[in-house]
Image (tube, rainbow, N blue to C red; front, side, top):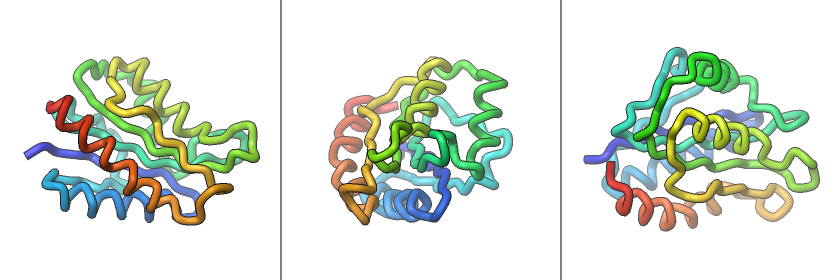
Length: 153
């Protein structure tokens, strides 16, 4: 069975709820899913044999949310080489801001710098278009599942 680590960073809870919804749906698809809360991420380096999905919202001027920033900073400063890691990013944001999905873009850039490979294009969910980001994420799961099967670890 393929393992999926699902990590989230949230401000008001939308990214957490979206991640929880995705975890249930991914498990129903037959994957072993581990939903990791921000306070469980200290020192976490994803296994390259697992898939990684990051669901994150953007704060202020496009920053990574405060709850997940320590993990982001840890990855950035320790710079583990992860050439076999396959990941996907789900960003929640508001397109009326210039920094729309800035945290998702930062995570995408960082993981790419670490040698990891995105198996899907970054999903950017716009709060000006949907009040229920989890529904957009569920629709996206068809794309993710096809990519996960095609890129089996």
